Length: 248
Image 1: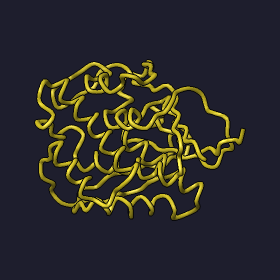
Image 2 (image 1 turned 45 degrees about the horizontal axis):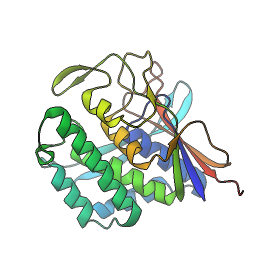
Image 3 (image 1 turned 120 degrees about the vertical axis):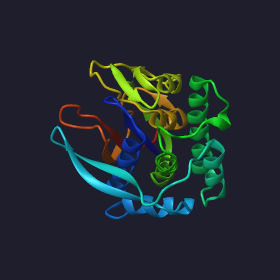
């Protein structure tokens, strides 16, 4: 039985999780078993007009993986129910499908609450519907591929300062992030930037079984996933560590 430990001490986002988990799977199973597996699995969503572009980013001397979700054709405006229908009609099933629906619900409810609208009125103008589906569904599929019986997470850095959103300039954590951070062990570092995104927090809320230090186990693989804002000046990344539990 395996445990995945998510080190989010410098922040978390959907693309960081997707990259870190893919990298960890590649480290464990070998070349071609991580990144290609994810692309093949996401094809089951049946979404036209998107693809994944992988790259290596060196952040403060650390080799990390980074993934961009590319939209190759114009996508329609999608609401919460549209995304649920895509997941429901896809080939996803079992725990991955259930977790994806739960994370999407948490994300939609947070946006609805802070904007004072009904859930069905939420459209994903800030976080991007295709990006959201790829990040959420991909993370759940990768956790299954890693045979993760449990997920443990470090305290999460929410950041500090201000962030510019579609609705204007907001203090960090922005309202949706503050809502989604409920129940998570978190802190704010003196970094003057947003370090946790709504999608990343929704995924953690769905999959984290506990919080704390690295648990006891045999280390099988380590993956590093950086985000679009990761840089030498702001060395942010998620580290995913795959552990085999020690028999009692």
